[in-house]
Image (cartoon, rainbow, N blue to C red; front, top):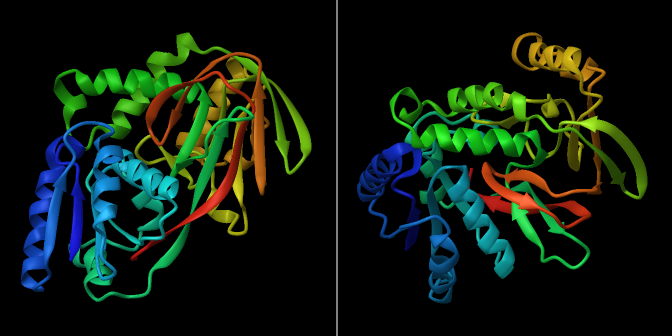
Length: 309
């Protein structure tokens, strides 16, 4: 039995369309399934534990939605410490996880054949993180950003709630770009200390510290060429020493020349365990959802999740 978890409103309604396509495919392949619809943000945290109580040995799990839906499901499975491979059908407006980890897929069968044929699952990296010395372990699939990224996400969410072009299913990257430029007047700099496997690094006049599990955020913005570092563990990108010239340099490198590695204002560090200390609360984002972080250190380390790919 295939248990389908679907966020119908993902991608401004694309979740429902993808669910219909998936059901037709499974019907054609004579696969039994049950559909569980998420009715509100965070519904997965209530829905999945009950589903797991009745999960059979031959059951399989298919999730349809955006990065936020995948984030919630992985977070529940990791918190429950259950080893269940996932099949992910992207239906959101951003889809940064799929853009990197499923870049070889273009047709519905590319996503569902490994599930239907019960191929061996593949293990992909995720991140775990902890807020403060005694915080509980949490999980993410894409990124955790402290600083300007969180401000931009807040603005992008407001744009998504407006009417017009920003409500289009393909508008996620546009919302992020417009949100970025609208948020520049709110840019607030900070100093931070990073600790990489016990070694300390100090950065001043920072705009952003972001832990990235893949090179993309904001619906396809290629922030840093992490694909060049296959042996990396936890990657932290720090944007620092910010002034007017630095902002122009960074915008040019990220969106035009793609030469981020040589920027004097951007540093990539990687290690088994990465911690960041900042001396004030920070507007932040995790997998595209806004949150406020006021407990330090923020500690990040690598985990894993199996997928049918």
